[in-house]
Length: 328
Image (cartoon, rainbow, N blue to C red; front, side):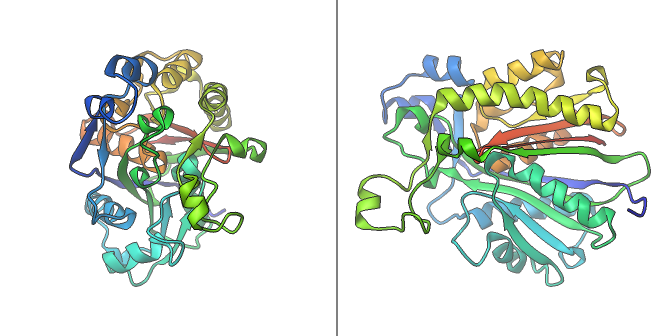
């Protein structure tokens, strides 16, 4: 380590125009607005247009982040895209985004850690910059989950939306930036949240398509139990590593999966609701895009001030989890 402080230089976000409301879902599956709001806190989510792919959403968020950071695409050394809905198996969505941006000097790769992907991406970027390998890195969380959501399954159809959030990571003044990361995984829980079809285990066939193997499958009850436990504990561990107390938190930016999970984390961290950035009522669960988009909105709304201590925390399929503490 050479004493470089690494942090976020600029944020950006993008959501498609089309809204899918709870009232719309009432016409598609057996559900109702009150049931959805009570159990998830969600009221609507955004849906990508037919011609939009994940890289298109990522591009819009990235342009905003670069502008906010005062960085040109040519100055980027690396692009990391966290996604479980890539444009295609390969080339990576990061490579497609690199070409769209004209970031000809940047290396590029995708990262797959489901809803924890953005924090995994930040940890990678932090390591590259802190060790002097790179100077400026674009980290994007982008998803078009509507393409892998089974709208005949009432348990998952209500949850997911499309969107993208992006940040430019680079050197910041001493005392600022990332103070800790806590990443984890438990592959034993992999079958609780997954898509079986389309990979080397179950290649795409007429049978896999007919059996709806290319859509999200989720054991909601067990994922909920895992999330309630891990969100609070991961945040606590990251705080301890950074040398901070719960009372030091100025703003919690959690993965936007379920309002009850967020409320549980707030309780464990002894925080009031106004200390959390919550926007799942507007966007639903956007997997890897949830945390960066919530961060970008918090910045946009003036809820993040210089010197504020932020905790970013998420969990996802894998099972995976991640938390980070940073000083803005």
